[in-house]
Amino acid sequence: MQREFLHPFCGNKSVHKTKSFRKYLHVKYDILGGVNLIKTKVDLCGVDTSKLPVLKNEEMRVLFKKIVRNEDVQTSREKLVNGNLRLVLSVIQRFNHRGENADDLFQVGCIGLMKSIDNFDLKHNVRFSTYAVPMIIGEIKRYLRDNNPIRVSRSLRDTAYKALRVREKLINKTQKEPTPKEIAEEMGIPQEDVVYAIDAIQDPVSLFEPIYQDGGEPIYVLDQVSDEKITDESWDDYLSLKEGMYQLNPREKLILKKRFYQGKTQMEVAEEIGISQAQVSRLEKAAIEQMSNDMFT
Image (cartoon, rainbow, N blue to C red):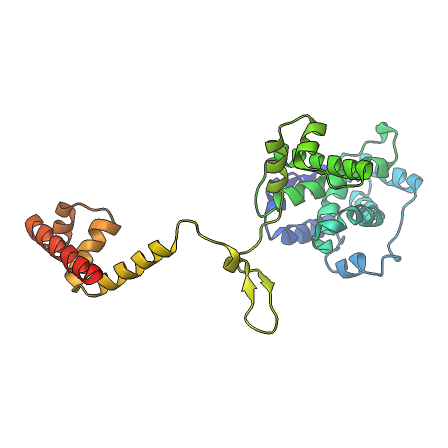
């Protein structure tokens, strides 16, 4: 009976990958019979957390035994969830530095809590909190990994986090910022792997992110990015080419566009515009000569 409540939802990993996962959570709470965390999430994630009930270990064992015996499963489950919400709150404090929405982390943590309730076995002979905390943390980490704007492989992410831990260790030891080479030597991997891994976990920045504004027009990241392919000389060529095209008649423009921008043959152009290949060749040659005269004379 208890598995029928959670498995259709908790077993579906796609729930965590969608922006509408709150809708799934709301349905899930309704199925659980009144465990409506959505409506009270402001209180739960805000100041008023002292009113949350806390179950003692013996009380939880009694409820788990009722579930095992299939006695009053829905009420017992609700009490277990509500009685361990503080546990979820204590876990999400570890992820405050990630800049994620606390309400979202709380709700994802509740998924981990309900999975823990679903899988907990009294035969484990451990406290429920000892069993539940790793599952809640794992659920939150999975959400953070899957919710990242850029998907990074788990092995690369693990390398990056290990490099950051080694960096902190070297800073405490030497009282200075270590170089990528020193971090790589400490980890026993190539320096390129360290640089690549740390770069991979950096949050993306929008090209239209303002980086400076002093009462006037803001300066965006885009303004600071140069294009090595476009030089002053190529820019002059572009303007001259654009001006030369402007002097042509519509048919000549169409032929040059199809020939040199779309890469079509003279025969293909002739079939499309309904003239002979010889006419296309003649018009193309005349247009190029006219543009050359306009641009270089």
